[in-house]
Amino acid sequence: MNLSIAEENHIKSIYKLQEGDAVVTTNALAYELDTKPASVTDMAKKLKEKKLIEYEKYKGITLSADGRKAALQIVRRHRLWECFLVDKLLFSWEEVHELAEELEHVRSEKLTNRLSEFLGNPVIDPHGDPIPDANGKLVKPRPQTSLDQANAKRLVVTAVTDQSTALLAFLNAKGIKLGTQLEIIAHYEYDNSIEIKVKGQSPITISEQVAKNIMVRPL
Amino acid sequence: MNLSIAEENHIKSIYKLQEGDAVVTTNALAYELDTKPASVTDMAKKLKEKKLIEYEKYKGITLSADGRKAALQIVRRHRLWECFLVDKLLFSWEEVHELAEELEHVRSEKLTNRLSEFLGNPVIDPHGDPIPDANGKLVKPRPQTSLDQANAKRLVVTAVTDQSTALLAFLNAKGIKLGTQLEIIAHYEYDNSIEIKVKGQSPITISEQVAKNIMVRPL
DNA sequence: TTTATTATTTAGATTTGTCTAAATAATATT
DNA sequence: AATATTATTTAGACAAATCTAAATAATAAA
Ligand SMILES: [Mn+2]
Ligand SMILES: [Mn+2]
Ligand SMILES: [Mn+2]
Ligand SMILES: [Mn+2]
Image (cartoon, rainbow over all chains, first blue to last red; front, side, top):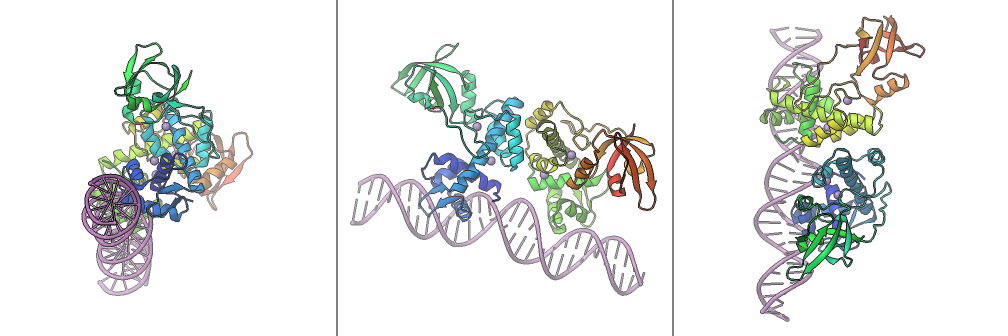
């Protein structure tokens, strides 16, 4: 099955939005891909034809088994290139997504597997997301919660769910990265903001929106 | 100036076929790009519009100054990726051209320059071709001739001009690579074949076609 | 210098991916 | 339940990149 770049981007976004079993709506997908709902409908018809998605008019989209397999390959390439850019070319984590968005479309299993080997077969990418192996298998992630829902006081940062440059730049400024240890000082009910103390720094207050996008695990 | 992949491929092929100042014909370009003359004419009009080529109906194509600059950037990316694939991912020289053909289209100066640095700023690629620097400057190549025209007896291989998998695989089989030392034993006038002795091997006879595509320098 | 051959361009069509505007379906509100 | 709102699809258009077949220009051969 030979997919175009546009088809690959759609498949990957469906995978991203699907989260388990939920159906993906036309509007959500259009927003994610920065395109228009009408275009998504067009593409849905094509991907259904290719049996990569399940789709009935007005009923939303889910990946078929083949579609999921394809998506995992694209995600694998994307995340491996991100590792390469960060680990080898010394890019910082907020710079790599756009580049990987292009590099992911070079379809060569041999290249992908050699790259993985070269990087030491990493299992998580620079944003804490798991990297599928050559068979599309993901390591089952250690249990983690978003910072706004964490119970424990002392935590370690394991991933970031929003990978926009804006959030990542904010976290850079606050000295927060993967592996950073932090402590919850207070929750403020008024706006659900949280006061935290990053190890070795003075306490700061972060908004609910930021907290929702930081994944943590008890230390 | 934002070029599409198709435009970049055309620009690069024009650069390749131009060899100094010769004009490039529609047919030659179509053959090189594995497309049809009519398609080349279409693209020529577009590239002329963008001032990347000089082109008048029936008069052939040459790169403009801007076009040459663009071509050198693409060639730089292509050859750097080839180095990466060979030096870091351990591909062999006949496998890398097609992959680089795709990777070259990821347009990021930062990525290109970081990659170059990571590779130790190489100045020749795995086929012996020079790599333009960030300003598009090429190292002036040390004088070299094709093997069929070499005067000296003892020679060293400096480059390969035909980068088809077929030739490169043939050279692999015969133990010939960049830096290989060889000696000319005899020229056979009948078919212009050449008997050579690769250092440490028994003599072999190669066709004129092969000899024309091996570049050498006196040892 | 005619005539034949080859090279190049034009005309018109096709595929892919996208869009806007209008129509229709699904859902929410009164 | 009727109506308003929102979501989705359809219809029709467009740009990019390509193609085939036909027309024309340039070049080579007779
Ligand atoms: Mn992408
Ligand atoms: Mn990532
Ligand atoms: Mn290319
Ligand atoms: Mn090369």
